[in-house]
Length: 224
Image (cartoon, rainbow, N blue to C red; front, side, top):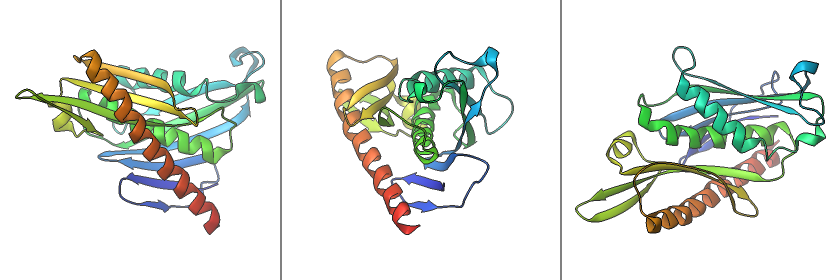
């Protein structure tokens, strides 16, 4: 088991062993730095278990203070996204916990889409590192639409300034290899044609992120 640091699109390097967790990584995407750890499968209490399959628990810890409503909302989104991906029936009467520590991020309500994409990618890497069985692999990307002087721009992994100026913001997650859309949350105003363009650009970006993650993990395995 390894802990990886991912910084898109910059560098990826191996950090160290984390013996307390089944899988873990440190992931950097722009200003967002995420530490994610997967614990389990562990034996769960009878009152907490889901009959015939694993119970999935997602915990997000903010960089400052106690969890807010925003953090709880993100926990629910992450849970809804990864629960169908994990083959839960392989781990009956057990608990798989995903603990996400936000190390740093920009302080604004508008950054939730970019923060979510970083958290989802960190979660995927940690699940993969843990060896938990999954139906698919996945990757996520954030995107913003800017409309100025009659021109429309689609910005991947938008900065805080772009998020503040955007007419709409989007978080999309695709499962591979079947390229299935498993998460799409949008805020703001956009046309049907713009949404079709968003789906296309996000798929290309998710493929790129997915291939980078896969290539770097294979590289680290060969270096063992």
